Amino acid sequence: MSNLTLALAIFGGLVLAAVVGYEAMMSRRNAPRQPDAVDVALDEAERALAAGGDDVEPVLHADPNKVQGSDRHEPLFDPDLPAPSGVPVPTAERRGGLDPLIDVIAPISLDGLASGDAAIAAMPSTRRAGSKPVAIEGLNEHTGQWESPVPGQRYSAFQVGVQLANRTGALNEIEYSEFVVKAQAFADAVNGAPEFPEMLDEVARARELDQFASAHDAQLSFVLRALHAAWSPGYVQQNAARLGFVAGIIPGRMVLPTSEAGLPPVLGLAFDTQAALADDPAQSAIRELSLSLDVPQVDRAEEPFRRMREAAATLAREMDGVVTDSDGQLLRDGTMDAIGADLEQLYDTLDGRDLAAGSPLARRLFS
Image (cartoon, rainbow, N blue to C red; front, side, top):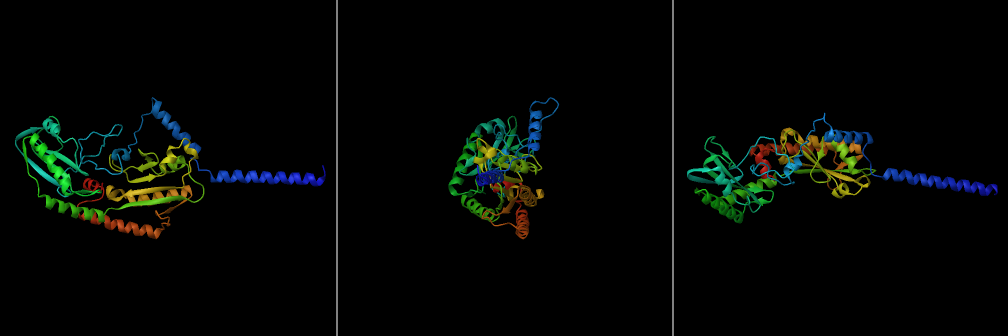
């Protein structure tokens, strides 16, 4: 073999090695980022101890997303309904109930006393009038408080209510008529006499409330986009968990719980459900995720926007991403400040209407 042939062979080998090395480097660079092995090992050890360790008491991480059951909900409106299977019963104090501010209320007078057992037996099979929740409360003979009927208790009066508006719109004439039918049937069963408000007045009130709610219903969303390498589901979950997020009931969703158990989460984080359900999630490539805040559902005292802004900035820094709006426009500090100022005005407006963000009434109205 001549020197020229040998030199060409060596040169060709070097070129081939360089190409292979470059391809390997690009493959590693473009592969979805994976969670840190040390943290994964610690998580697995903690799960193993919680599952089988005799000396470790398991800790229940309450998932507010499970308590909600879905993104649209009427929390604490029907407190006597059983919690879905596998969902922890909220430990938060029950508040709210029927309120003339957002409900049509039909009082039912009785000749004597009615038992809670009889009232429960007379309950309608579905507690909705169209898309609006219906609730029944009794005036407890002993406590003098309105409550959902309880077995073994006796009641001197009842009231049936239907919500004036929610995110599906205002109560209409058909829904009002359905409410009247259900309330009348209940009243007949407990030997009571109902008194219904004028339908046209209540429907007009529902439209006014719906107009107010529609004009003050804020649901914010930030999009976090990968700048270079994509992310694996495990990588996203690991970084979000460091900020306090926990797994939601839907694959690809995490939530940041409130300080009080049983209430809607402060923030939601979501990415591609198909990536989370893939046979090998480690190979799923996620290039964007969303952070969301349902403003009327979360108490102002939780400082949800500040926490949303900080979470977005931290995730973008740690995961090599950028924060944008849904159209892909970068969200800079000036824009964030303006959003925060607008939210403060919104909070003040809701407070002035006795519908403070995070209150039971606000959670029902904006559901």
